[in-house]
Image 1 (spheres, rainbow, N blue to C red):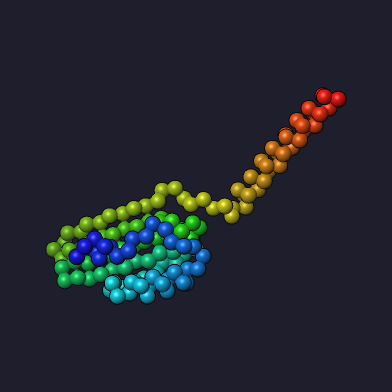
Image 2: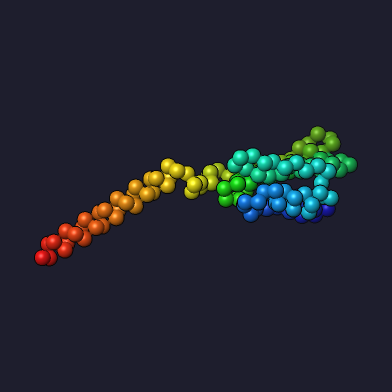
Length: 132
């Protein structure tokens, strides 16, 4: 069994917006490859958890994506063998996604923009009055 068959498809990003379509597509595409598939659908995150039970080991995978930008936020792949040994790999996104719909950010950028426009026009007005 190769790495692709073990991990299934590994995504670094998903399209954002239509989470129901993404859920239906994922489940219909990969339902035969896993014993269980659970969808994670929270306010800011979407993802899935899968498990595969084989005769001598259990594989589980958790993939969580940001609903803001669709980029992978957390990934964990864990293999637990029947004799008790567990191996896992985790990836976690440290920087939070940039939320451009934040009202405080929009207000701050607007104030800075208006201030820069004011400075530009006041200097231009001064330069035209000094030339006269």
